[in-house]
Image (tube, rainbow, N blue to C red):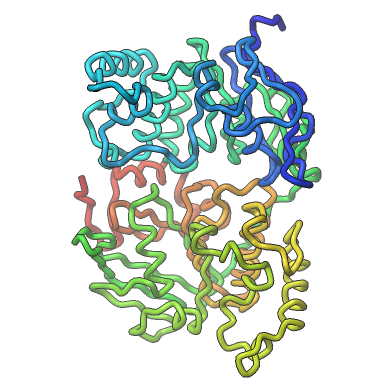
Length: 515
């Protein structure tokens, strides 16, 4: 390898936060026109390292060279000027602006009297044509699909002169077809000399797109090897330090009905239909997976089951009884356990301790409260037991939850929910952002709950996850829900087409006419 082929060199980077060493003497390089996939468990140090490369953080030790130039300040502006661009998992676009306005936002001097939109438009269209990233410069961001928004994010980086792209979970919210299209675009970009750092928890995608793989564990670089020497099993073992057996979904006969949603519709305050005549049936010993691109009604369906949404039309039955009281407390009392989509906002109270979070839904448990007084000893013993049972790493009962990794925060939520042996479990994106070890643990817990007689509604944008542990799967599209299909009778490609609206038919036989 010659010096000229290396576009990024990371040399002995160390970053500490108090007593925590987030990055410990990490070194690797990225070649021109190549993809380096950076992998690791949650909390392994990937985000910290990317923030150093992009200039958000300054390293305590070591240095970074971009095209031979030293990156010596914690300034994104310098990183951008040297040719580094970053596309975050959660898009940073202004919905009320057009594509062109988002692209040029922040690129012009503050004292400019007017925007040079013509030259900006010409440059945008030139980049769009060169890299096959088709967009309408005058379209408002809020009118775009998720895949189109991602194109805008990539174009925004290219517009600023990026020659190295950092892609953080780029396919997390894409359909399989959109992911395939993204990879076609990436390969064309690579052929034109761009280089990519690719971060993903989807090992199949890593095997598909990467040239080289770097694995972090506990802040250290533990492996760096070409993808030709990799397999899913090897990568997973490097990430967690041991072989991870994948959980197996055993064939079980579905039991008695637990949840019956019939013809439910709901309009939001603006009069927009969020649910359109949705029907769904769940039985004991059954996992029903719900696929769909984010924003197609999954949140409204989740809120309905959790009791935070009152249906406008239709009925909901639990264990044969019609539900009239749509309130979270009532749903908990009816045996509903919720793993919410946003664990930070809805799943935990970040400033509470682990032991406090573990009793949040123990409304009537006299073991923890007597005559208005919390029973500290019982609460602590309860937390110690669950920390051990659910392998919540790096946590003591008095640990503040906000400081836990995403995987361990999710274990706190699972422990709190599953401890009560709920009949119905709503798991909304339960493994989003989790590494392979933490995701496997979540799947094991959901399958165990299914085995003891619970029913699980699994809402996920990860189709491999749905096909791996669901018994039946349905697709949400523009507020409608398709019929429930045995998982053995569907493929990734079929689900992807339904998610994009192609051939979609709701459970009542109505084709979607959404724009």
